[in-house]
Image (tube, rainbow, N blue to C red; front, side):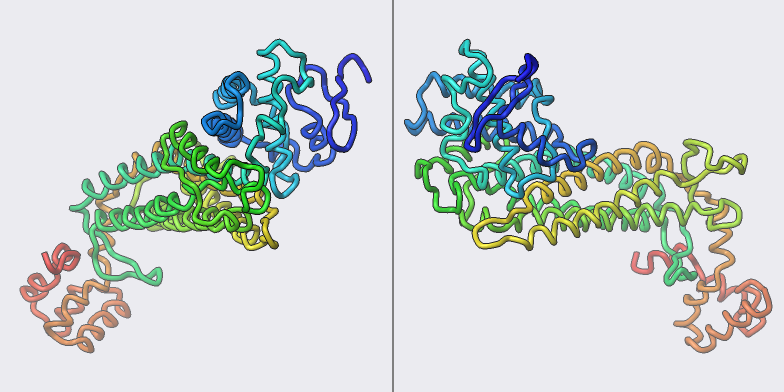
Length: 466
């Protein structure tokens, strides 16, 4: 053993650990045996914070229940506070692709908290006195219930604190645009072909409604994530935990986070299945679908601008081509839709992983957590970017929109109630085949100028029941 390492011991024997590190033997083993995606798949701040919250809540609960003495409880609480605050994030080096129960990450937290506590008590690193990582920091817990609790806490905080505010901000921007553009009558499109008129405000309000549906799904999924598996221990029976440990720990987690965490309806299911995580991931996929629709509509309406539809103007954020001068591309829409594609892929991974519980344990927990958090964080960032750099700067090209309305053959739909479907269709075909306006075709085929003017009113067609 060199001067740069210290010797620690676990159930399998001695392990050399870097002398200045707060982690211990089990974390070191995981670093050596799971060098998979080291640069890309480390735990992020929400997961480390959730680990600290679980350890603090457990210490508080165990002390209340008479399982842990006051001195050790205070040492663990203060150490866990440092983990929660982000002071020691560098001491959590493990990757996502490890044991499927998250055992090494749970032990990483136990070892770091114990070493911090023992340092405060005046003991050298690795002594495990007066606070032992298993006997005291992990008291009343198994990785099988502690890590699922971390999964839910981290997911709830990211969804509530990061994603939903970003979605709400984008929604607010689009709602304001819907109101501002309510007087702009444009041609609707179905099957990528011209259809009857619609207000641009109605179009944008439709985007808002679809985003609202995605947001509702996310909020609904939060309820299942409020259940914490703490108290289940190894297989859901609660062995080696005080019978009220899970209940009290959940109370403390709720107080630490400001969220309504509670014990699960069934402890066995809380370890063996992850339906709540799968539901939350599916809700993110639903939201991604709504955002994909919105972003695709924006880039199609902005296409051209001269040889495409060109009805929306988008902000000119950066040059669009390395060879074509003056080109501007819908890059914010492209970035948002790429995020949505990634969310769909992440959800496929979550859905499959959540289906792989065997007997009393699902052993795909870390990859479920990683993919859900990545989806939520990517969507939060993409919504914020699309809002600030695209949605706020959207403006209609009123002249082009008006020209498209005037040129559209589908205004003929307003004639059908007066002259019949077949005669109206013949007028549309005549205009198309002869390259004339609909008004001229109708006049040629017997509809008076006054009747055409009275019957074909795009504003009224967009709001027939107003």
